[in-house]
Length: 123
Length: 315
Image (cartoon, rainbow over all chains, first blue to last red; front, side, top):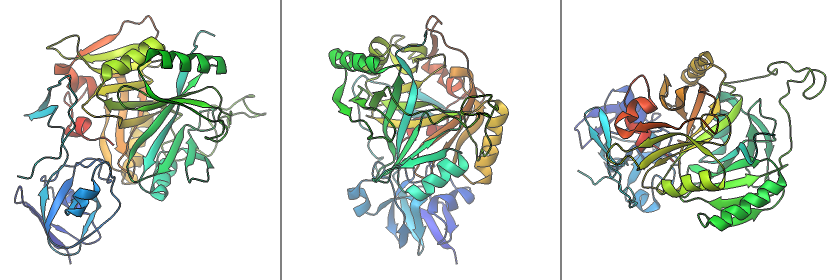
């Protein structure tokens, strides 16, 4: 029986069976709350914190999810398989330091000093 | 020989999270051929029309991304000269010689870290395996393509696009020390001297490597493989759909390089491209300039805007 996944940031909910990962179930349900990147555990775009529920996870890139983050219940949605209903908060990596989404176009805001991208703060 | 010095991208070493699905992707879907494995579990592959022993190296690791990119130079003498030039330039760090045979059938390699944080290598010797087209012996009376092609079957590993911070230092290294030309560049409209993208050629190709300025070190945007025609790009996209491979964007056309393209991800989230077309680059060809305000059509000529993933998704 499919479980219910709720994205706290947007209030969207969708169904996800235990054989499907959270991100692919979200895409199939045409929800948009979790950013979609590589879908394969490498880029970190779909990083979420699970605030409620049980899940299984598969290997995720350490470049996208640190051991500390993982210990705090952060996962990549594309490698997360629900074992119960889940509540998630979106944390996905975005380069807000250099890009800003303005309507349909991106605006570069380059600086000459390097800034390391930080995970978005929880909202 | 008119083309001298650095000849071409010779190999790219990619980190994968799990080897079995990676091999399924790079062999069955992309269509490379496995040529060797070593005792550390690395797998060496080549595309069908490459003569050199291997061009893609896969290593299982906890983090996706690129370990290094290797460049074939024309001779051992050039290898020694360029190694000395790199050291003298002061632009690179972690200079070291990798001994003969550390890659199978490959001579010694000179390894260095460039200002954008990527690890590069130069090498002069790698055994020629050939392309299996010869009818009466290797390279004798060849057919246009060999039997047994599978998957997308690109002809060669062609180039990488890499993200890093000190673009100016890396461009200085490639142009002033390694002899590359700037085929195309992206500058900011506000400061027309401030470069945010460089497409560099050491050959007649529109690019052999490209860099985009991002506030990161040593990041990998994609490795690209060459196809002969737009129809083959369309066929590649058919194969990607059939195999449910994670698609990024395309098929479409790039403004930069004029190439026809489709982007997709390997099972570890590393982006691949297969492309066709482009133009012939010569060292005296005027550099093409784009500005950030037209970066949309520069990257994706039909949509005329960047998708969100282009700048923010990399390994």
